[in-house]
Structures are given as C-alpha cells and as structure tokens.
Image 1 (cartoon, rainbow, N blue to C red):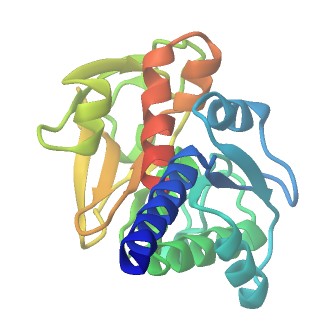
Image 2: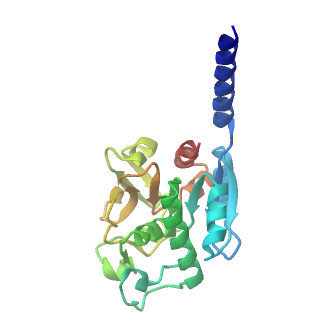
Image 3: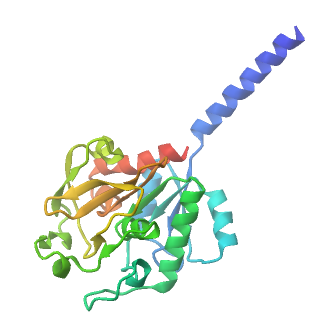
Length: 249
C-alpha cells in the first residue's frame, strides 16, 4: 500500500512539475541597441508572443554575462550599427557606416556564450550579421557598391520592400511559408556564410535574408525586421517570436 501511495505521489509531482514548466513564461533577453536601451517594437513582439522581455545592457564582463545567461531562456540580437570589418578580416571601405566597438565586443561575446550554453538565439538585421561574424563568416560592407546588381529596395522606408524565397526544410519555411514580402532597412548583409550554418532565405537578387545553425536547437537570424512587421499589423511574422519562445520552454 505504501509503495502504491508513493508511486501516486511521484506521478502527481511529475505532472504538476510538467504543467508548471509548460505554463512558465520564458524570459527572453534582448541585446541593448544603446548602452542600456532597446526599441519598443522588440519588447512588444516578445510580450505578444508570450514571453517576458529583459533588456541586456552592454557589458564585456564574462561573469556578468554568465549570470545573465542563467536568468534568461533565449536571446534576441537586435539591429543597429555596422560591425567593424576587422572582426572578419577586412579593411574598411569608404561606405562603411558608424561602428560602436563596445557593442561589437558585447554582441559577439553574448552570442558565443549563449550558443555555448545551448540557448535559443534569434538575430535580427545587425543581429544576423553579428551571428554570422561570431562564427567565422564575412559581410558585404555596402551592398550598393559591392553588389551593384542588387536592387535599391534593401534600404527602403516601404514596409513591403521586396520578396524573399524561403528554403525548403528550414525552420523559417515552417513559420512563414515558401515566399513572403518583407521590410528592408540595411546596406550590409551576409557575404561568406559561417561554417556550420545554412541559408534559410534569399531575396530575388541573391542577398541572404536568413541563416540557421545546422546542429542547434534554435539558432537563427533574419535580415529583415519581423518585430516592425508585427507592430505594423503583419501578424504572420509573430510566428518567429512564438517559435523562439516555444524553443525557450
């Protein structure tokens, strides 16, 4: 009888623990775009998808980052300035935009530590570029001069700037479908893909619009801004954030 009661108790505890885990709202760390701030669209997209946003301020202190990474369940790397070309073995072109060395160090360290900790990571715009550079890839410093056959729509104020094709078998394909129209506010993009990654989306003129780490639970990046699309009423892009939160559970 005692063994039977003990077995029932174990089952009840297991079920309750499982239910609590499913009902827990994952904490999603959002990399700061300024020393301690980030755009509201990232925060709101995470909240709408069912997560708890936590902005991670600039820091190069590994002890601080380890503590933060024990607190969060996933990471979003945000958009912003250009990355310094020396980080991927190139000299600066005249068309290079503003760089922030403190942010470069913070972003690359945060990405590498998060992946090492097996946390889901989503890179957005600069975030996908930082993800690629963090693992050995390179960038086009300026699409108009280095890819003159690419169209000007990559730096557009139009919320529906251009179409992308999404690779069969990719996570992004499951979330957005075979083809989708996206916004586009960048002059840099992935050039040489980092080892261990695959291209998940590409524009009609050959610019990489999405990448995914091959052997990872959920490490992916997109060149467009899904959080802005969500803010503007394109709710299908919320699926990207819902997937991140699902993986974070």
